[in-house]
Structure formats: C-alpha cells, structure tokens
Length: 168
Length: 316
Image 1 (cartoon, rainbow over the protein chains, first blue to last red):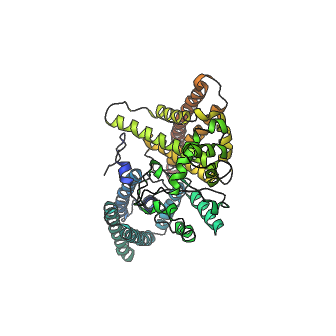
Image 2: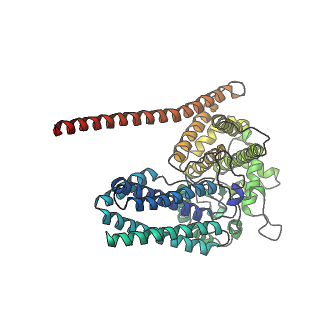
Image 3: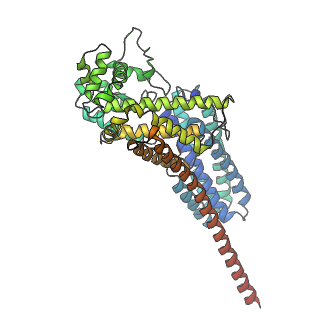
C-alpha cells in the first residue's frame, strides 16, 4: 500500500479507490482521524498539568501511542483521499481543555477521564469493525487490521487508566 | 413522492459539497417525472448502498435501467465511457442515451446557445426525433452540467497523464505555483470554443436548483487539482487551500469572459498574479506566526525576570 511519500503521489491511488464504498470509508477515516486528533490533544492537556508528577511517564507513554495512531490515520487519509473534519480547530482546543481540566482535578481525575474516553473510543472502533465486516472483510482487510490493532491499544489504555484510577 | 425524491437528491448533493473526487452524473428525469425541477446528481459507486436511493426506485419500477448501472460495483468513473455492459442484451440505458444526445448537442451550442434547440439538433444528428429534447429541462441546465462534468473528466485525465510522465521520469515535476497555473489554464481553455455563450451558462449554473450540482462539480475539480499538485494536508490547510484555489479559478473565469486580448493573454497574466499572491499569503502567514511566537517568548522572559527580581528582593 503506498505510504504517501513527500514528493511522489502514488499512482495506484486510483486503483485503491476502485470498488471501495466511498461514503462509508470516508466517514470511518474522517471520524477516526478526528478522534485520534482529539485524544492527542487530551493527553497533551493532561501532560501540561501532570507532566512532572508520578503519572507523568505513564501519560507520556499513552500519548506517544496516540501520536502513532494519528500518524497512521494521516497516511490513510491521503491514500483514500478523505477530507479532514472541518471541526479540527474546535477539537484542538476542546481536547486540550478537557485534558488539562481533568488533570487539574488530580491524578484520579485524569485517569477517570482517560478511562471514559478510551471506553467510548473502543466501542466506536468495535462498531466500525462490525460495519466493515458486514461490508466486505476481504476488500477492507488492511483497514480492518489497523482498526483492530488500534482498538486493542485503546482497550489497553482503558485498563491502565482503571488500574491507576483505583490506586491514585 | 417526486418532491420527496427531489428534496432527497438536493440534500444528498448538498451534503457532498466538499466531497473529494465527487464524480458527478446527471440523472435525468423521464417525462413522467418532468415536474421534478432539479437534476439529481449522483456518484456512481455511491448509490449502491445508500438507503435514500431505494425510495425513487420503488416508485418507478418501470424504469429499472435508470438505477441498474449503480447496482454493479463500479469505479469512480461514470458510464460516460459507454460501459453499458450491465444488461446482457445490446440495450442502451436511458442514461447513456441522454449522455450521447448531450454530447452531440455541444456542437450546436455556439450557434443556438445552451438551449433545447441545441439539444434537438444534437438528437437529430444521432438519428433521433427532435422530440427527444423533451427529455431534458427547458433551460439547458443538463447540457451545461454535462459539459462541465466532461471538462472536469478531461482535466483529471490530463493531470493523471502528466503525473505518470513525472513518475516515469519523462518530465520534470513542476513547482506548485506553476502546476496550479497550468491546471487552471488547461481547464479554462476548454471553454474557448463556447466562450460566447459561457456567460449565459454561468448564470444558469447559479440558479438555485442548479447550485448543489454545480458547486459539487466545482469542488471536486478543485480537489482533483490539489490532489495532483501533491497536496497531502490533513489539517485545516485542506480547506484553506481549496478555498483559495476556488477563488482563483472563479475570478480568472470571470476575467476570461471579458478578455479580448489575443489568445487570452490578459487572463493568463491575471491568473499568474493571483497564484503568486496565494503563494505569498502562505509565507506571510508563516512570518506572522514566527513574529507572534517571538513576541510571546519575549514577554515570558520579561515576566520570569520580573518575578525573579521580586523573589530575590523578598528574600533580602
């Protein structure tokens, strides 16, 4: 699959798009991209407040994973020629405020926020996986793989949040 | 029911205003549905799964061929290229027939304008009765939309060709501003044979019932140009760039309408200036941001210094 290099537009873009259910895939990628972007900003907000505390490294670790997710969706967005959501500037601010706000409530607050967010993200990914499986598991194999992987990562974050929520 | 389908169509078309690569087809109403004012534009690969598409289908069962082409999974390219292989017999769908008539009608536009007369003449050259023009709206909307869609397809093919050449190393990759200039020029040049009648077409495209379709065509063309220019933005720049290019395209088109210089030199010079402005805008924005950041850093430094001074004074 073309990785979308800096100067070369993959000429197989057109081939990839043949027979793809554009509305469904567009929506999936756009929403996921927005979600990862928002998650990034949430962790950034949490780090801004709790970066130097004992949970700092943990949050940093989860944030780094989210950054990877975002990078992946950026690539997918280019390959499938999906437009980004117009609400990006809003998620930018809202995410940061949510992260910082929950962190100001203390470590427990930050972890509770993480748990809630990750819970809804993994539910969301699950329903997307269901949709894609209903459509055509073979055609969307790669996308399915990516989403499954990310869903597992988010679940992990959720579990980490639960662990520390109870302790802190 | 017809009104509901029309409203549904408009809603769908409006929803897809910013959709990339929206390949558009005019789905034209047969005489029975002539009351439906707007042409419902659809994307080929879209409609197979959308539930909204099924409601007109249920009510107009006697015209199954209108919808059958959408049932087969097809690529983004519409059936303009005559891939009428859905039925096993040598039967041409109504849609394909309409495309053929409209394409034939374009020849008569310089003489008759974007009107039913041109369509009638076009039908005649295909050996059909002039009454075939009755299939279409009387204001020539479908003819214009068909033409625009055809031009956009030609442009995409041209850009695809150029891209292949660059990838094969046969051509140099153009800098962005030149690429945009050339793409817009190539697209506008397609208007030259019809330039006398183009202002009329523009005003028809601005009629309320045509706006969803014409906007859809415009945005997908602009998105195509940026795609081939190598735009890979995934942030708000995506919107900014397209908005800027749309502005450039529209103003250049208007200038072209009033240009009487040889081979439209004035227009291309205008285009060059606008594209240069747009490039500068990017630089200016960066400069403003850097200046802003520097100022903020200066203020932070000043604040820290003051607070340190206060602290040390308090300690003493």
